[in-house]
Image 1 (tube, helix red, strand yellow):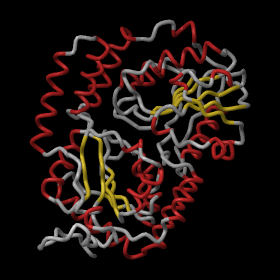
Image 2 (spheres, helix red, strand yellow):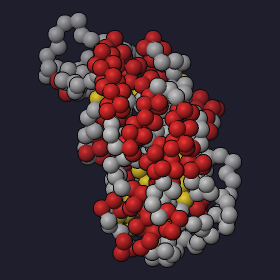
Image 3 (cartoon, one colour):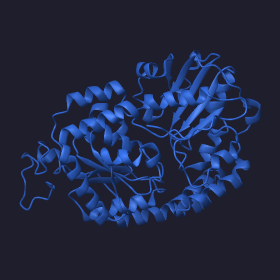
Image 4 (spheres, helix red, strand yellow):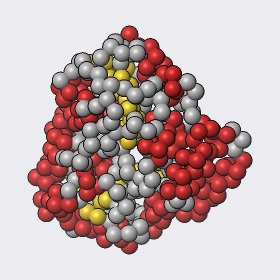
Length: 429
């Protein structure tokens, strides 16, 4: 294994980078790194988060902050219990008048929201091919797509929960606009921000969570509306985009440096502590932890190159979740390092398939364990080289793209009975 080491003598900024990427040092490991949180700065930030909870005056924001603080402390069960206890005081108004128990409705067309940043690169033709139905993509958050609503339309709202968005109001407005259509949501973030997710679940006809959590609060507050879990996938490129980008850059050299760029969320305390410590103790990595959310404003090509240039990256959950980044790593041909507390990994990708891809499991949340996992990931990548990288890429391209998940969502919705969901025995790859 060739490890990227800090140069013992100064390297000219215009010279090739010692990591072997083929890039100039100034554009690779000699680049000025963006601000990342150190362990000390992280402790200061978390103390401020706790103080802000106590100072919050708005009841909705205060409850949401209290829930997220419990999650940050590793008390997800207690957070869900608090949500269930307090939720009747925050139930969306007029829910009963707008919604009710729905009978099975034929689906003849799809209107899919593409306002959230994770949906910006959705491709209507790609989705139509996967689902066999006409597809209209519209920014539902901005009031678009109403002209496409008609009876027998399935409206799919996807993306992240954001407490400042009037997502529940939006869903009820869409449903009221065309009573003959069905409105479903695919919750990307049901593993945190429980309050907004619960309000959304009560404002749609049906709701599909993405992640398992210690206590199923959604079924308790939105009885009869919760469907089986639909895991996340690679969504930042469509299937045609990903195929084109892979062919365009398939001969690019890769770096041995461990990769992983994370946005700072206070709920992910365990993840934040490990990343901050690794950034401080192991400067040869390309890890970052910051509050910069500019990644999704970059072009699809630039985002792909950020993944394509590495052999391995680390996938750490916010709260036990199997995130998009896991599938993005495989889509770019990397060997992903998966944390031990990702609850749904064995259900989505069986252990024998994890061994053959391969996927490296992190033993615990220490820098020493991360170094060991990185060494095993690089050795696994080098043992098969480009052939293994292409196999991982094709695995995601065929099984774990947005189009695969939307098709699954449509199939699950189509199997509704009058009184309950068809019971699913688990997601199959």
